Image (cartoon, rainbow, N blue to C red; front, side, top):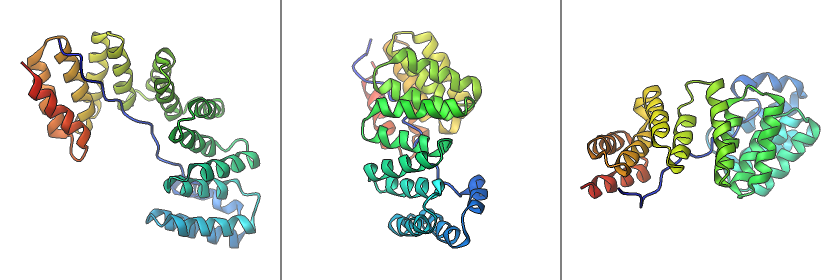
Length: 254
């Protein structure tokens, strides 16, 4: 049995939420016209990854309309994209102070706290998101990832399960819950979850294939392990970590 290698989790869902983009466009109407113009310019700069210019635009919007929570949230998001997490947290906090129901700001601040390794604060923010919107599967998922980082497997499992109950097609939640089961030696449950993730999204299941292959490797089912490692290689695309791990797994099979 081969237990030297580690399972590979799916990471935090760190797609920072921008106010005023897509379904949030209606929020622009709450701003004065000059502030809304700068706000839209900021969103346009973010769309082409010009984050410094976006920050300048959002700052102009804030100067004109200092009580607009969404402008602070979006400027915080731009800071986050630049890995300037402390500044991002300051803006997300200001957005929350102005509007305590700003779910996006709580979610984004949780991601920034995670980036700094401040996991307890991140959990508090994701819990606020859940309190405001108990049907938000991503908040449960992100809190589960954070609990996992702290080694709180039971809490993480409960959050992944809740995310799956809300969204039965949440493949990443199946992968991460399966990895917890595998870590605890509950291989049948782990294989079931990873298989479900593969069935949901087979073209983007390289992580699930690799982890299921590793479990089969550990329990001595080498033919199944080889098949999964090869599938991981077929679908890993530009994910060099998975490609390398799957190749190493194949090379170490008896």
